[in-house]
Image 1 (spheres, each protein chain N blue to C red):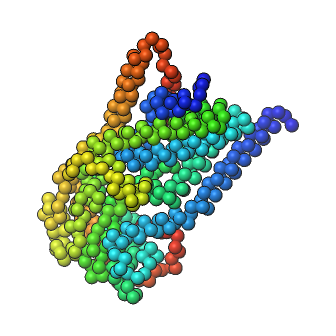
Image 2 (cartoon, one colour):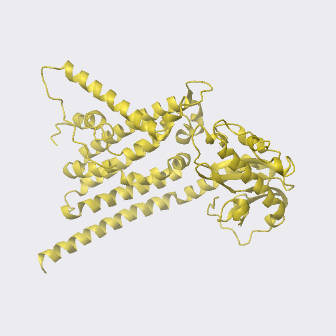
Image 3 (cartoon, each protein chain N blue to C red):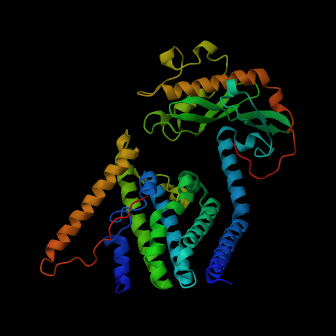
Length: 233
Length: 218
């Protein structure tokens, strides 16, 4: 991990090593919750919060925790923060909490959070770990929101439906109805639509990457080679 | 002490420390949010009940005035079903029952059934369901007006034989491509009315034990 500066860490999380589009980690929540923009945004931000706090904590304690017990300690840290976030959402975003249901506690099992603790935060200082957590979390949120927008628009003809669950009653007006009296395209809402949509997003990203690479033909080698995808969800 | 034992002890101690710290964080957050969560749950329940019984029709606390009844045949579940009672000046004003339609296309459909004391339906709402999006989910008030077709009905209107979807010779619409879901809901509402007709005096009995206000929900 030879990150030269913060800009690279940020670009890595958002684009070159995006947890959802390149590492293909955390697929279970990505596919399950991306049926609307608001659901995706809600779970994405909750994950981001957990990722930043767990990364910073892991980074601070990295020199005290012996290698033999580091994984259980990381899991403990992550589980504690997830439970705290879950309680806070139940208290302050009750409607969204009900919609996301089991997927909030399941953030604990999102393997890229443990992955960042192990691969980055346990080897870097708190500030860099915070930036990494923020960038990775934002990358995950972006993937969720883009996929959510695709599925919501194609499946239901709206964008930002149920915005009041997240932003309060005043946000009801945020909902954009793209097509009036749209009957909906069921496939996009159902699980297969999530796989197909994710496939298209990954294809689009790879296409853009190829174009960028071709433009700078002379100096070869992309800025940062993607890590190999680990298995798991 | 042998080095290996020493190491194990230190590790155990470290793990224990982190467990205590993690639990502490959760406990603190719980302490700070518990009251608000209970209030949220109570408010969510009241919002639901007020869809069927407007706040100006009762002067008691709906979230606290409830009893539970059990009838697997008519109420669709072996679990106790909660009945909320609305009263004004101590007089029965309306009831909300929470039966289950067990024959949904994909599992239980939990309902809210609002009833006048004389057995007329104030209305029906779907609490939770896992019916197919775009087909069966039109029982949901956010998706279509279908659920309004129960308002004002009773066990005599239509007569019991016609308490079915149109496809089965009844008066209630089914959906294009989805008959099972509305059929399950119509049957559950009819059974709830039958239950109510047989038990309506018991449903107004005073709450058995003093109710605590810890946000008990359906």
